[in-house]
Length: 124
Image 1 (cartoon, rainbow, N blue to C red):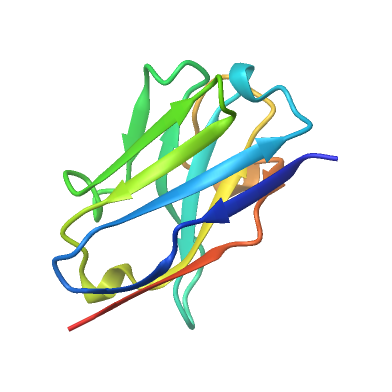
Image 2 (cartoon, rainbow, N blue to C red):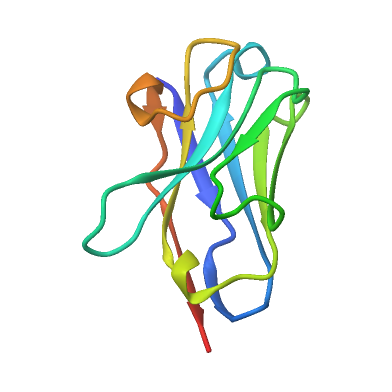
């Protein structure tokens, strides 16, 4: 059973930073792509960032490009999301996702496993 456990969420003022981390267990982490998605109250879940198996290819939603950075550590089975210059519109539950393929994807339906989510609240 694959488990994805997110951590690092919380409350931050606008312009601040947070770093989310996702730990994967019982799975071939180092050979598969990972992603971060988010869902705000009353909205559909949306793509945030994705990274390929090696970490050499990343992709971001336009709304976070230049502010967020996704990275992974294949020795520790973790994927992180560094979030800088946070805005109120970044408030959401953030989900880590894993897919059984090495190439990244911005489509949530292409992911096979999901974490439970971690709340990020940005307020002025």
